[in-house]
Each structure stands twice: as C-alpha cells, then as structure tokens.
Length: 317
Image: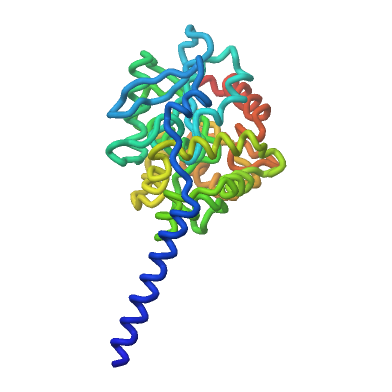
C-alpha cells in the first residue's frame, strides 16, 4: 500500500511539473528570430556568406588585402564576430578576418550538431582556403581561444597565437555566468531553449565584464537578438553539455609565439588558469589587465590593440 502511495505521489509531482513547464512555455515563450531579419540588423555591406558543410557561414574580411599574414579573430561562446568591432576599427592597417562560428551569430546551427574544436577548425580551414590565406595569426577569446590553439597545433600556416582568456582546461569550480549555468543544467536547459528573458542575457554580460557599468543597452540587445537566431539556443545547449574535452597536451607542441591576455576579474575562466597555459606553451608571454573581465577586446579594446602591436614587433610571428 505504501509503495502504491509513493508511486502515486511521484507520478503526481511529475505530472504537476510537466504541466507547470508547459504553462511556462506557453505563457513566456521567446520565439526565434528569422535569420533574414537579423541579417538586416547585424549584417550589412561588410558581411559576406560562404556555404560550408550545410551552413551559410557569416564572415568579414577587412583591411589591406596585401597583408600577407592577416589576423583571424574567433569569438567566444554565446557571442559573434561583432565582439571584435572596436579592435578591427582600431587596426585599419591590418587585414582582419572574422566569422560567426557554427551555432552562433548569423551562421546558425551546424546540421551535424557537432561543435567540437575539430568541427569548428574544419569550418575555419574551409574559409581560409576559400580566401587563399596560407599564413595567419589567430586571436581567440574563451571558446574561440580553444578553437585557435587546437587548430594551430595541427596547421603550420598559423604563425602566431593571441589567446584572450582562452578555454581548454576543465574548471575546478563553476564559472560565474548565469546563462552558461542554465544551459548546462538538466531539465532547466530544455526551458532555456524556449524561454530566454532579456534580463538573463544582461546578467550574464555583466558577470563577464570586470566593470558591469560598461554593459550598454545596445550591447545587451545585440547579444540577445543573435542568441535568438533560429537554432542558436539548441546549439548552445549542445555545445555546453557535450562531455568531450580538449586535449591540452597539444599545447606543448606549439612552437610559435603566443601572447596570452587575461582579465584579472574574469569570473568565467578565472585568472589562475592562465598559469596552466603559460606552463605548457613553450614560447608564451602573459599580460594581465587589472579591472577587466572575460572579454577584454570588448571591455578594454585600446589595451588589447596596444598589447598586440607591441607583441607583433617583439615576437615577429
């Protein structure tokens, strides 16, 4: 009898939760935004698109075409190529190539639902081949940093790396970003696919900045809109819940100059992880920015540009 009562109680609670979830989805659903609408808002004359592996990959190629070793810029998780706007504007003398990686920005989801560093690297490789780029310097932030060093370890055409708060090592504690926490939480992440309050995006951005006051309404709106691109929310869940890790042993094989830039106040990937990269990479230099968080190229673009220019002269990658 007690067992039957327990089963009825469990089924009752489960049924109630399902009804509540259905109510929340119906009452607070945040619909996807069609990609063509977003292209009008966040594309423009500088944007180009190339078909790769069933995707229309959004990229920009700016600066002097005669630059034989361009900068290739890779954004982090939940972001887009727009994260590099200030840096590109401050380096008009340098050819800069940037793209929306699969699952993010205007590119949208990978039909294969593969968001591993190798899959991202294959897309990057196809783009560079299309642009006939034989050598380059890759700069990557967070997830983009992981893609950058993973790709560089197997491609001799990469002459230097700039890693800005890069990912790669398993974290001993959860990062301080509300959006990522929700996306990796079972059950809850199923609701995130349908319900995405703008306040969560704003909170996540403020947690990623060392100085939250620098997070503007326009910045929040751009992140919010692009994360609502058709398929991007499911792609974020797929990537964050993927159990496969990165092979950090490959860091020791890097023989090229590497600049590591880290925000002292990074809550997503704390500063302590910078030393792990520094210990493994043979020719690495580290710069730490006080008062800066996880996305220094957005929060402190002038300092990032100054560091890159100094390193280019010093390291001659």
